[in-house]
Image 1 (cartoon, rainbow over the protein chains, first blue to last red):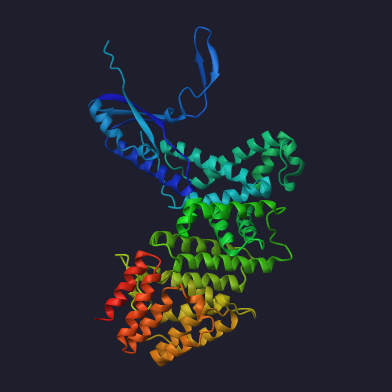
Image 2 (cartoon, rainbow over the protein chains, first blue to last red):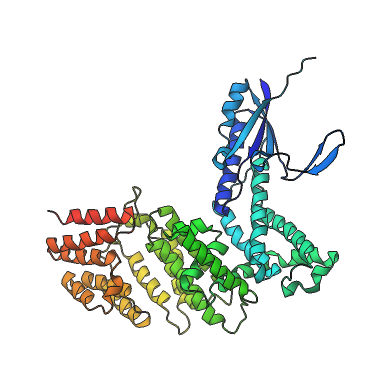
Amino acid sequence: MSEFLFLYRGGDSSGSPEEMQQTMQKWVAWMKELGDSGNLKAIGNPLEPGGKVVKGKQKTITDGPYAEAKDMVGGYTLIEAKDLAEAAQLSKGCPIFEKDGFVEVRPIMQINM
Amino acid sequence: MEQRAFEIDEHLFRHESGRMVAALTRIFGVHNLALAEDVVQDAFCRALEVWKFRGIPENPSAWLMATAKHRAIDVLRRERTARTFAPELGRLIESEWTLSPAVHELLGTAAIQDDELRMIFSCCHPRLAEPAQIALILHILCGFSVSEVAAAFLSSNAAIEKRITRAKKVLAGSKKLFELTAADFSARLSAVHRALYLLFNEGYHGASAETAVRAELCGEALRLAGLLRRHPLAATPATLALGALMCLHAARLPGRVDASGELHTLFEQDRSRWDMQLIGEGQRLLDLSATGSELTEYHVEAAIASVHARARSAEETDWERIVGLYDMLMAIRPSPVVALNRAIAIAQQDGPDRGLDAIRSIGDLDRLASYPFYPATLGELELRGGRRAAARDHFCKALTLARSPMERRFMERRIGACGE
């Protein structure tokens, strides 16, 4: 088994209370599914929308976001899967796709020392 | 790593939205209604992000309210010089020592129930027409977005947006939320009854083809009527009768539309599908409403629904009593639809020709011109009188007036019943 990071990017979270509740419940159900199938290594965290960017030799500090809002990382999860193909397949169940967001699937480097 | 997930009410966000907006509006002042809505929207966004990962908390309502409280305190702190807030907050807002305790106290559970009621009363402002009152209630107290209200009323988003924006302006222009101790309380309570009655009817008889949407409107009306009953000032006999009427009608909803989405009249419904628990609650409320001297249209309509609820079939219904009750209703609140229903009851009791006579004598028949169940009733009575061709014509007319695929299929079935 290998480990992967799911980065949740973008996705419109606005809507009526009813729509927001439905979105939330879909996420809860999806996370539970990942847990039940043994693919959830760590559920991860949501990220606050704001932040700072520190950049360059001058180490200039500027306000975030560092990407377009539609690409911004809103949270992450640690996944266990056989290979990258399986991890990508697992990400397809994520409710973020219904809200114009996307999932970045990144293999965590395996280090044997 | 397991996520905690507690079961929650399927409309929790919707209902909490109404409670939270009402409570925050009291603190911010009604002129800052939009600000209260923003804070509530923020709280939901936060819940969405956190609960995705952490699961639904044990007490989701308290979680949401606590989040809204923190945001409210931030807003009050940040804007205390830029805006004026509710006078109740007074000088408490000026000091960090008093601000937070004051907000916590003002947002206590007991106070919030009153806030919801005051918001319902405020939405029924005499300067607002009834459709605007209902749209506002759905939007503010039931958390319906503009497009959800538009879907419920088969109206365009633009039209509903305009209606709600105007209504909010009137609401924000009133000095403060309606006081339950105000001198015009009972007049306003009547307006609230009427608005909730119309909201319920929109669900029960309305044009939306979506059974789920219609059940939601009935459910919201029932919930808000329940709020009225829980307040000693608002729990009048008319309030109880309105609750009885809603319960007794809502009990029939499962029989009205079957599993395949077909509409059934009272005469052909499978009565075993009626909700006995709601019927019981309706009867209980109807009994409780029989105090005082005021007889409202809600009492009479509930009494009619109660006769139906007790009958095992259409044939075994006490139609004589129903005709008598419709006579009473015509005296209290005459309308062509009431007169039409009275004619149907007369037809049951004295035969279809007497029913047709009663329809012909309705004064303002033209007000029924676009109501599909007017020609459908004529068709039904002609069919029972054996005049198939005439019946068919009426049902064809009704088909052209049908407002939803469900109504169209119903009329087509009735045309089919007339034979060739």
